[in-house]
Length: 77
Image 1 (tube, rainbow, N blue to C red):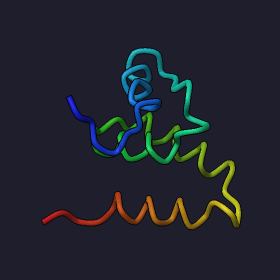
Image 2: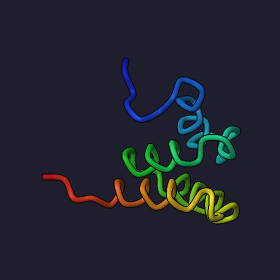
Image 3: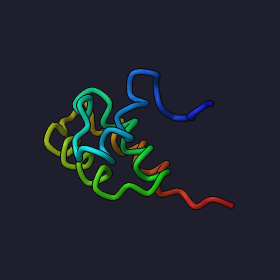
């Protein structure tokens, strides 16, 4: 099975979150997990990722977050 958009290290976190309400690797994979939360409609994981990313937003990370956010909100045709 191929799950696009998630690294092998992060792939278990969305499922873990659904069952335990925690994502052990959120600090390192928040951008990836945000995409998965949007794709698989897991709003609480999405919120947790947004809080994680917002808490460490800086000049060095703002472009990555902005690009990821823009891609997730782009309309599909």
